[in-house]
Amino acid sequence: MIYSEEKCSLCTLNSIVCFWGDMPQKKWKRPILGVLSAIMLFGGGYAVHQVVLNEGVQNIYFNALFGFLGGLALLGLITSIFGCDRCVAKIFGSAR
Ligand SMILES: [Zn+2]
Image (cartoon, rainbow, N blue to C red; front, side, top):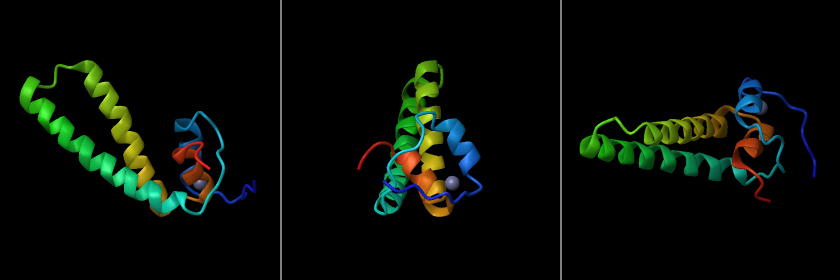
């Protein structure tokens, strides 16, 4: 495993959000992360829309869960475009 020492403007934020630490860096993780994040954002947005229509916004656990997942998806999408390999690997997780 080779870790690049390259740093980007997202490194600080990602090291806080991705508390699990560094992960194996792979070239294919960037495009896959972008696609997955976009799907999560659109899918999550649709799910939130449905729940808000059906039960309103009182469901606090739902809000917390989708707030977290939505934030992660948004961060993943931004990172796949602007982030360095290290950030991409971090958000993507332990897949090798
Ligand atoms: Zn970075």
